Amino acid sequence: MPETELGTHEWWESYKETVNDDPEMDVRGHDEFSENFYVEIGDERVLLEMDGGEIEALVPNPTMNHQWSFGVEGDRETWEEFVRETPPAFNHEIIASHYRSAVRNEDGHLQLTGDNKRIFQHLRAFQRTLDLMRVAHNDGGS
Amino acid sequence: MAESYQPGDIEPISGSYVHVEVEGVDHRIYFEENGPEDGIPLLCQHTAGNNCQEWRHLLTDEEITEEFRVIAHDLPYHGKSVPPTTQEWWTEDYTMTAEKFTETLVNLADALELEDPIYMGSSMGGNIALELADWYPERFRALIGLECGAYSPGFYIDWLDHPEVNTTEVNAYACWGLMAPQSPEQTRRETMYLYEQGATGVFKGDLYYYSVDHDYRDKLDQVNADECPLYIANGEYDYLTTPEDGRQTAEGIGEGATAIEFAEIGHFPMSEHPELFNAYIREVLAAVTGDREDALPDVLEPDDVGIELHQRGPAREKTAE
Image 1 (cartoon, chains in turn purple, cyan):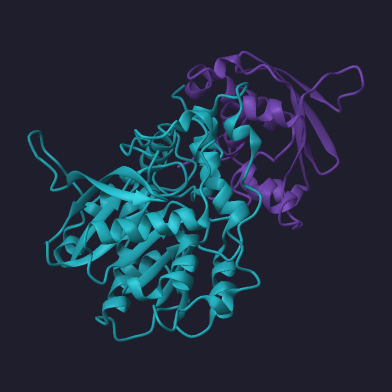
Image 2: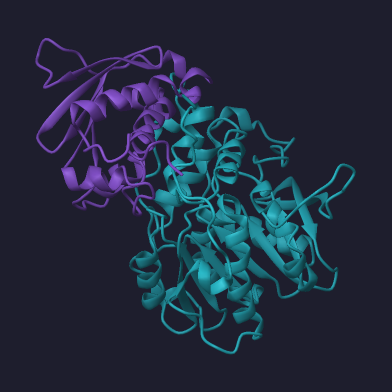
């Protein structure tokens, strides 16, 4: 999905396709990943409803009628760094970015919220899902 | 990778076991080596929860093993160094401490009769360079702390040893972002594979030392780098002990301590991007032996050591339509 702006409807739909086609999401138990989580880019929150390692639905602006286990929040500039083909140090992966926020109290990084146990139970599938934002954003990467 | 093998090729690495006493207990320690018997000993320490295979590309580097006797070991409870047969080790949680770690390394060097060795380790193996320079400066020719800092909090995490978590995979991929995304995917994945081989609780037990026991923020003046030269080399993508952490640590130690940043690489340099690491570390080793006339630069870039990065992240081909 080249040149499509991060967070647009078209971007999210292409991203969903990338995740649902990803071979790593089918193996090593990643096809058991059915925990919903949200991604907040600036003021815009999108809920990813996961089912068996695939994005079943994308829900913009989720409400109290929706369910999720955890989420990732960050300003738009940080997410723009995260999805770069070669991202800058410390915003290149979710645990790295969260660590700089949560442990080192630095601004300009992503922050995890929600149920830490669920995060660690599905860490690789969740991490891979987020890494695929970079793949989708750069048309598969180089 | 510079290495290329054909069927039937046998790599020049040899493996052996040596018995080493630690805290009064006999341990059977596995180590691999390559290089001339009379070469300068270079003792290489793996990262927390991992094993000596992280160093396999250094062990087969022809240029380095021409001058250095490269030795890489598995700490007790890691890799092929099984737990001691005289202890009921299954009745307690494995926990690493600075005292136990340094005693293991010094007694291993003694058991192998290493004369004036260089010590090099990464992550927990990098941090321990400070304790070695504090407590045993006379035992080593020089210390190279890769991914080394005075303090590295926040990674002693309960989920890394929890019955409702797939710790085999989590102990690996909790470290995925410690590597630079532009390092080759094959070697990053191999680093994760090595992490997946760790025994239950060992990674977390090592991290007790790394994130809790090790704290030199208020005692850098005790690090005797003036007696034993200390090189601190941290990767650009290491978010736990950053290049800036390395600079501040060296500055706090003062005379004898040198900080250098390795650009475009992360926290597992020797295994995540061996070709680039081997080129970088040749520069540091040349400084240790005096073969390098110029001072080491503040930052080493791939171009400085003749390495061209071929692969940019994210390494994945988009599915053909």
